[in-house]
Amino acid sequence: MAETGGEANPDHPPAAPTRVPPRFRGRVSRVLIPERVLQRRIADMARELARRHPPDGELVITPVLNGAFMFAADLARALGAVSTLDVRFEFAKTSTYGEALGAGGDQRRVQIDLQPADVVGRSMLLVDDILDHGFTLCALRDRMAGWGVRHVQVCVLLDKQLSDPSPETLAQRAKAAPDLIGFRIPDVWVAGYGLDAAGALRQLPGIVAVDPEA
Image 1: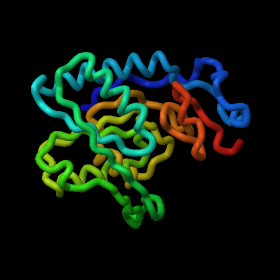
Image 2: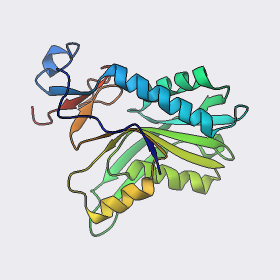
Image 3: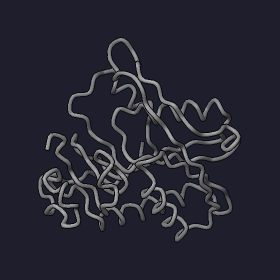
């Protein structure tokens, strides 16, 4: 079972952040996870990772770009504060094409920019920003297994609880199976802390809910 920090509370959120650029303030409805809560949970996740790995071992952190870059950096720094693990980085750039998963099967294809020679025989920690349908994480898990990676763990900051997932999507999410989860969030659009809304808002220090129609 995945380690998780609990659920974001959508019912009693703080006010919308003042650091949102003026042209986007109409789209940000609330702060879902404030910065202090994020950083506290990331410190807890780092301690959990330190318990799972020998202090003289190597761990290759593989952020899924672009959304996970802030999370992966803070997680690595927090891990360095509590462990002597030899932490290395290899970055995975992915692109997803095709239609959503339906009764006819997986119609999406995930292109992965990561070289097999960089990961074979190593212990990998895939770090992603958010789990929704699970296409990217499933593709990365499968590809790394075929490349001969010694051990793969998956860590996600956000696990979106989809409001009406199909049976096929539920199966895909189960296959993605994160080992470590930061927060479970409701089925809303989110941005901030590396996640974007139409290329913007990545710089926000917390996670905000975004109105996709505004």
